[in-house]
Amino acid sequence: MPVEKQRYLELIKKLQPAGVTLVAVSKTKPVSDIIELYQLGQRDFGENYVQELIEKQPALPADINWHFIGHLQSNKVKYIASFVQLIHGVDSLKLLQEIDKQARRHNRIISVLLQLHIAREETKFGLDEKELEQLLQNPALNQMDNIRIAGLMGMASFSNDEALVRSEFRSLREIFDRFRPFERKNVKLEILSMGMSGDYEWALQEGSSMLRIGSLLFGARN
Ligand SMILES: *Cc1c(COP(=O)(O)O)cnc(C)c1O
Image 1 (tube, rainbow, N blue to C red):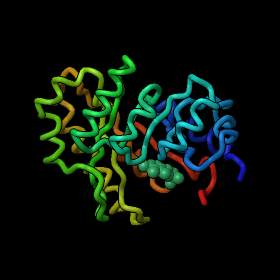
Image 2 (image 1 turned 45 degrees about the vertical axis):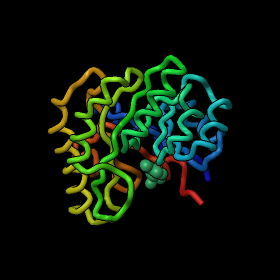
Image 3 (image 1 turned 135 degrees about the horizontal axis):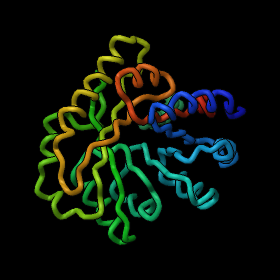
Image 4 (image 1 turned 30 degrees about the horizontal axis):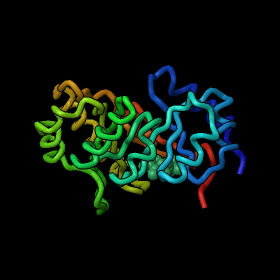
């Protein structure tokens, strides 16, 4: 399936003036597709699977900002810690501690987003508001010099019910606003990652600052 270059250019023209970052989600897509968007200026790419990411990364330009957007298991952090720019789906202290530890080994600071559970759908991933508060106040964060909690991430219900999806994005935006004053040396909430191919326009209207878009740019996945 050809890369949707025209659609990419139209989208980026709209997002750039608004200061919204586009993460091109390239999971399951070949390196050659990534290069096509890279040549149009795209630098932020997102992957969901550690194995796939560590195969692609060395084959691609070093100035790509790699986003890990899938569910990251603690025992796999070590494989991506030397290069990953932003880890989107963090939802436990244990994972934060492992990212900090691996970042320290590489003398880096790794930025992360905390994942909130906003969809009506059941899933085991994501924090609720109470858990977010506890995490942001946890004294253990004081020892973590190699992470930055840079914002929040969430996924709305997989639905074309506009009112439902927008209300979920809105609740994430409200949580984001409520917790922004919560600054610590390694906590500064600046990024709100919400919106995918099917719902990004609603996410933008509800205040997203970072979209994660795959199929709209690269075509449907198998
Ligand atoms: C796959 C994926 C995306 C992109 O999905 P599309 O519908 O193809 O845009 C965004 N975010 C996460 C967390 C994903 O797993």
